[in-house]
Length: 66
Image (cartoon, rainbow, N blue to C red; front, side, top):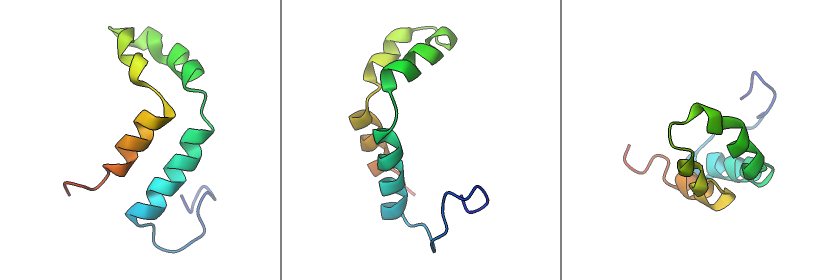
């Protein structure tokens, strides 16, 4: 992230990472993203889960078991 210029702060901990992801998820049009990737899936119904809330929930689970 430093190399790309997206982060110039210190150490990225779990809380900071989740907050950065939440900001990014808020800017995504998940309907459009789903349309773009559905051709690559055997069962496009899997995309019905895609939402900001779904991905934020996954982000909070990062590092729980490691």
